[in-house]
Length: 480
Image 1 (cartoon, rainbow, N blue to C red):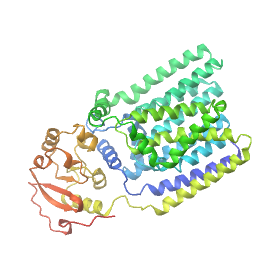
Image 2: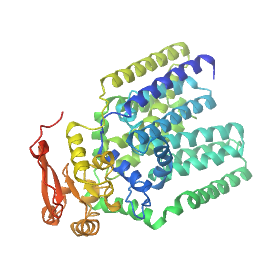
Image 3: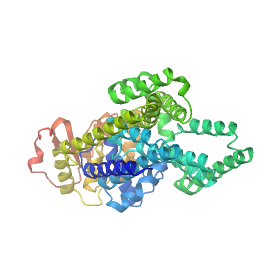
Image 4: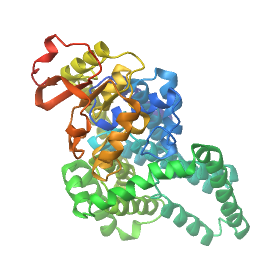
């Protein structure tokens, strides 16, 4: 990579790091963040993942996040910071791909475009698994390109490792068709001999087995599949397959929609230039679109999985269009980079720096006043558990609409858990607990302690004789 590339990249990544460090304190934007933080705290307190602590994400998520969570502070900020570091590694992997393909400007443009897409940049420091899948896929692809160039089998071992990591983080296989195409392409080009192909198959198989035995099997494979695959199968009975849901989400992300459409249009117009490496990115993009269409339940943040293959494909096709005007392409890439950096700075300036809203702070104060550190508290607003340090029964680490509506948390199961753990408080905050059939009759041993605005109710166990005389006993205004 030339010096001017290095300066641009270092400057861009420094800005990204600074904005991510600031935004780890921004308000919680998804209940999943509270759920996963609470799950990590339960695991840290000695409740094994899957066997006791319910976790809907495959083990790769824990493997990637837990060490950073424990090292950087054991809170949501620590987990977000860990995700941010992984996203930076993903950005470096994009540049690694560009260096190996000798198309650094295309990858600089792709990286700049990705951080202009809200679906993507939000996920770069949100405690969810999507950006991890993207990062591991990019590292696997970069190592594969390096292997093709160097012919050193070590790089195929790295490819296999991160391909397994991506799969066991979200059961993602969207990159595999691109990998198979690369192998077939270079096999017929005589750059991969039959003996080397056999070695590659053996290495991938052995790496996959070792990865499974070392990193997945210890979690308890039946427990893992009951939490992850079992929940998804149950969800299919409630969430019908709606092919137009993907398009409805994509229409709301106009930049991503434009990049996808223009990239594919350029490939149709310039069919003669649809070749390696662009076709690798196209296969990855089309495979991702296919899986997003059939994925259930699909949520808007899942579109972040599409961003990198789409921006890479667009950037390479756009580069082919301006092949004879390379100076113009470089100028456009720098302009997009500057716009991306400016937008990041603007986002940081306008974003609040408090994780909790006013109502959430009030609820945390109530929790701390009426409970001891080791009391159980059930809440469907999981960030209240995480921020107060009062954790739920491990089986209720995740109280999501998906679990409730799919009957993974049934009324009988909920009553059973309440009777077993006897939580001091039950907090019905965002409609999830209220959606359990006969919720009110299942908490007959509890009385209303406080009712905040918009039906956010805190119930206390009847055998607790403390009485509540404070400002929390009246409805508080909704914090905006």
